[in-house]
Structure formats: structure tokens, C-alpha cells
Image (cartoon, rainbow, N blue to C red; front, side, top):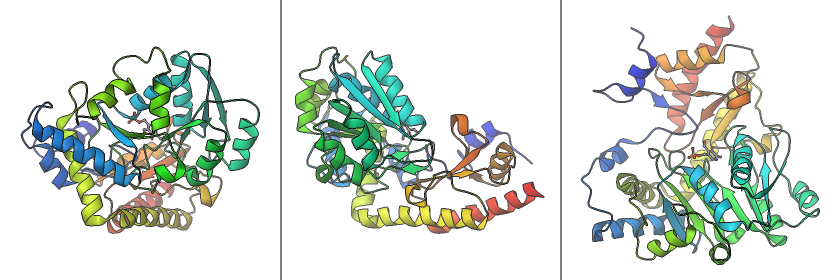
Length: 376
Ligand SMILES: Cc1ncc(COP(=O)(O)O)c(C=O)c1O
């Protein structure tokens, strides 16, 4: 019997029946689901303060930073908007380096907030290079620069460890969207002098959506105090004030924060960060080898640009991608079509969170059969 999508997703008795290889939200491990179901105390109680502190201190370790870390009751887009509202004065230019849909989104957020927003990018499939940064930043003064680490639409990883020092040499505040890389790829915030490094937790943290996190530097905190009309809900100053006593200004998603602590504990004490990063590297490599063996061209223009958390492949065999995704779902696995304008021209396999190499192999075997069936 073939179940329809809603039954597969929301089976009332059994919950989700498919294994997700998606670029977020991703598969949430059982141990986290169990912790999410535990009884809550209020967010103005000592147990909550302790939990909040564990979350922010754990994040500092994952990001290799002494900078304060904040918890937001929103997805990552909320912090992207917060960066624009808190750090950019009305008469200043904010520069968005875009290599895909999420870079474009950040620029649109700048525009929507009435900031003088400049977008500079390269052809989709490409990455920002130090040379490109020089070319752009020599032209004008940009007090704030925003850039993706991993661009989830194209499956390109911007080499942030090379780019951050170049941007910082121009004296700008640097905001990095690490939504689909934080906790899966090493990002050393203090070494790279990143002012805001942000992500939501439904990707490499392998948690359900509804919570996002960031680190914030003293320079960014100082700048915030000079900016007017920062709004209320995402005001960094208000959030920082509450964070001092391990709280949020408004009611946070308490179960998700408990889940975050569970995951941080697992990453830091059981798997180990270096092993976690290495597992993601291997997942990326294995997927690219599979794509090569299947004669599927990667969407990123160069091998070195390819992401280790999400692979975007071209529809090289011109098959019905929607049918491929649906057939795979019926056989127990979730992958996704291309993003936005890349729909049907590409498809994406997410390999982030808690996925193991063996699980990836199993899914790829089933996907191989389906591609062969659809080609014949
Ligand atoms: C790179 C990147 N930035 C931002 C976002 C937006 O994140 P959210 O949906 O958590 O707001 C996403 C979501 O997929 C993303 O991949």
C-alpha cells in the first residue's frame, strides 16, 4: 500500500516513518526526542537558568569563542534580520555577498528594513574568493558585511577561513550565516574575528526547528548601542541584558533548549567535535564519489567549492526529479528537489546532523536503483 505524503509525515501513532537526508529540518535522534518530552519548569526558574547557561557555554565551545552566545525564539532568518537592524545605521552601507538563494534573502532583508543594501555575488555554483572581496571592497566603505558560510541552495561552501581575514582587514563588522554548517563544520569564531556567527538548530544540530543561536563580539555589542530603531523582539541589547542572568527577555522554546543541551553534551563529550567535523567531511566525500559513479555532475563549479553538509547535483540524466524524490520517499528516505529556480534542474541530498556513513550508503543504494529505473 502506498501512503500519501501527510500519512507518511504525520502518522499519528508512529510519527515520521521516513529517514531524512534533507538539508533541514533533519532527522532528530531518539535520545533528543525523549528529552524534548520531559516536563518543563518555567523560564524564570533556577533549573532553567542552569540549562540556559549550559546551552550558551556549550555553544562557545562549538564555535571556539569567548564571545557571548545568545538564544533566539525564531529560525535563523530572525537573527539575519537582527544583524541588519542592530548593526547598520541608516546612513551606512551594508554589503551582502551572495552566492545563492540565502545570500539573496539576506540582501532582501536589508532592503525590507530600509537599509542602504548592496549585493555583490558570483554566478550560482561559484564561491566568493579573496580576490573578489578586494575588488568589491576597494570600491566603497562598508561598515557591515554579511556572508553565508554554507549556501544551502547551491551546495557551495564559501571558504570562510580565507575570506574572514580579508573582510576584517577593511575594518568591517562581519556577520556569518552558518545555518547549514554550524556544528557540522569547524568555524573558529575568535581566530577569524567573526562578529556575529548565526544558525538555526534544525540542521547540523539535529534538533526540531524553532530555535536559533549566535555568538556576538564586543565590537558588535558596542555598535548596537549607536544604532537607532533596532525594534523590540530582536534587539541585541535587550537579549544581552537577559542573557547575563541566563534568561531570555520573552518566553523561549524550553524543550528545544533542553534538546540543544542534550546535543551539545553529546557532541562535546561523546562524539567529540573533531570526529563530528570529520564525519561530515566523509559524508560529503562519499556523496560526491557516488555522484561521479552515477555520472551526475555536481552543481558547484569546482570540486573545492563543494559543501560537506549538503550536496547539490545537476539533473544530468534529465529524469523526473519530483518522481525520483517521491519514489525514494515511498521506500523510506527523504531527499529534496532543487531550491527555487533550481527545482528540477538539480536535487539535493542533506548529510548533516547525526547521519552515519552506513546510513548514507543504504540510502544511496536505494536511490541508485530508482535512478536506474527512471532512466530506462
Ligand atoms: C544558509 C541558510 N541561511 C538561512 C536559512 C534560513 O533558515 P531558517 O529557515 O532557519 O530561518 C537557511 C535555511 O535553509 C539556510 O540554509
